[in-house]
Structures are given as C-alpha cells and as structure tokens.
Image (cartoon, rainbow, N blue to C red; front, top):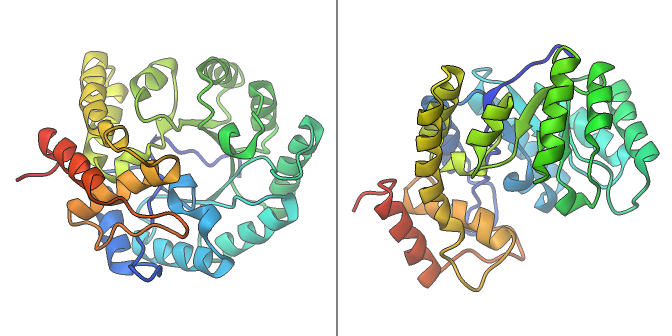
Length: 308
C-alpha cells in the first residue's frame, strides 16, 4: 500500500450536472477523455472541485462508477472519501474500493473537532481497516485542522500514508515536509494543490500538482510538468505565467464568492468551450450568469483558450 507512487499532473475532476441536477455522463466523459488525451498522470475524483460534500451516497457511487469505467485503467484513479468522522469515512472508502478506486484521499475529521492524537488515530484506523493506498488531504480552510508536517512525515515513514495532497496554503510547512520526506527516503508522494505557483512547488521538490484549472487547460500543466522533469526551469516559469493569465477567470467575476466563484468559473469555462452541456451547480449554489459569463468568455478569448 505504501509502495503506491504517483507524480505529475493529477487534476481534481469537476463534475458536470444536468439542468435538473443529475450527473451529465456524456459531458463527464468528454472532460475525462480531454484530460487523458493531454497526458495527465492521474485523476482525482470527489475532491473539493468534484462536489464531494454536495453528493449523496448514491451520487458518490455513481460518480466513482462512471469515472472508473471511463478511465479504464489508463491512469490511477484517486477517490476522495471526505466525511465528518472516521466511521463515515470508512464506509465511503469501502464503497470506492469496491467500485475500483486505486487510492483513497481523506481529510482530518471535522465537525466534532479533536486534537492531534485523534487526527493521528483517524489516519491509522483508515490505513488499518481500508488496507489501500491512503493520501492525507490537508485543507484547513474547510476542515479547520492543519495537518502538521512532522505528523505527515512520520505516518509516511511508517507506511500509514502513501502521500499528501497539500491545499493548506502554508508553503513553509510544505517545504519542510518535502525536505523531511527526502530525508526519510521519500515514502510519500507529495502533491501541491496550488494552481498559481506550481512552478515554485516543483522547484522545491513536489512530486506533482492537483490543479483544478487543469480541467480547463490540461495541456499547459502537462507541458509544465514535463519541462520541470527536464530541468528547464525558465520554461516552467513561462508556462506558469501563461497559466496564470487563464486563472483570471476566478477574479473577473463579481457578486459571487466561494464555490460559486471557483468551481463555478470552471464550469462556466467548460460550458463556453463546449466540453460541458451546462454550467449547472449543485444546490443551493447558482451557476454564473450575465456579466460574469461574458467576463470569463473574454479571458478565454484573450488567452487563446477559446477562439472567436
């Protein structure tokens, strides 16, 4: 289990919804095939961009079932098993594994917040009872617990964790984790959740990236990863600069925030590009409309992602 390794570009897959809030399977397939054709190294389903916390148990099963079918072993499938507490996480983990997931991704427990002793025990229980490659998802903005780099490194060295997806925004902790992981003979696959400073993460030694914007521009992220592997650091920076111009789809909107402005921008862009049939969002979030759609269209046109 701890021998599972992954690197490169592993997009957190956005989920397309029909106008009546069902899974849009044809759009889902177009999105996945487009990223696979671009050369991504893995796909992460049911993460923050993948509507995990909006999805019922049956909806989660449907997403994983279709994802595994479409991917068909071409790249590893990572599945988020994000839930409030340990036993609920285990239920989702068993379901995902039964449907064909290659690895599982879990946060610290949330809602009934505990201390670090409980967080550590949470990951140890998941490792013991699920018996599958397990990634820790460090996203304190959502779960209100920051995973300490020393804890993550220790759990990696002991074989409890196969990797870390770091969306903490704490670049000092991330850097320390990379150095300690190297000192321990690199037991963890360490992936940055950044989109805007992926070049810096690669230079520090990250094994890969999980950028939501790769749903929209997978080819640029794949080219950047390959340039980093070749040590072409000026090219890595140039590609990051191009990526960052596209990332302004997040900040040209007005009157929206949080999920509506982030994942909503992804869905709007993918709809404008013809990948998604709708930009529908999970309830109660509204899809972008009016001025916001036109603002995103302009960014896509100006950056060449969309042609007139």
